[in-house]
Amino acid sequence: MSDATIISVTGAAIGYDNRLVLRDVDLRMTRGEVIAVLGANGSGKSTLIRAVLGLVPLRAGRIELFGVPLRRFRQWQRIGYVPQRLGAGGGVPATVTEVVSTGRLARRGILRPPGAADRAAVADAVAAVGLTDRAHEPVANLSGGQQQRVLIARALAGAPDLLVLDEPTAGVDAVSQEAFATALGTFVDAGGSVLLVAHELGPLRPLISRAVVVHDGHIAHDGAVPEPAGHHAEPDHDHVHPHAPAEPGSIWNRTWNL
Image (tube, rainbow, N blue to C red):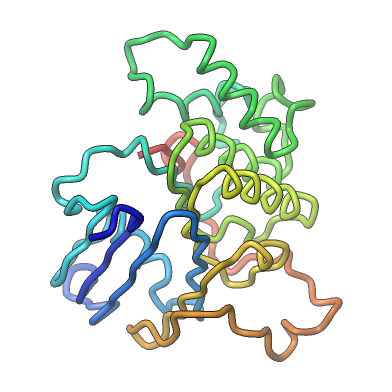
């Protein structure tokens, strides 16, 4: 495998319990790419990226991360993961800075106290998503879109090589969508790679280098981003609407730097 290949999925069959969701999946991602995984609700988009991260069983085939078989991969600090959007307040009395700081744990270790480099990385991540003026406010006081920006900042704080994002802009306000796009653009310009699941791309569209469309348990398209169709192509189409049901939980049990 080339040193530039960071994700390799070969002949994968993926599913839960007795239900097979995806079959004969092949996917390769190289350094610096921004790949959008697209498809209808329930098509298996999220299942695919969760399998890449070892969170869903692989029934057949092979997955490698950074050239290492998934079962032996241990450098999880190289990957920042943000699952599907949930309420980030969750009753946790933590500030934006405190939550984003937890993104440094995988890199510095739990026992070592944060140093100057950690504090600088957290401040930079908060600034990257446009929340410096809210850095010392409780996360519970923020809007849903701002809370989602906190989760992105938490992943960025760990200085990963790869960001994996599951529907990062679903149900998020337009200002936050633009902030995501700016932060991801800066991350990619610095050499990062992004794998994201999306129902609609909105402001993220100019960043996407490749689209993978999941349909009927297979990858039906791997290449240029398909043009919007139907009402999604209308200039005034509102991209701010959720496409997945909310799930209970707090920021602590749903967002982590692997």
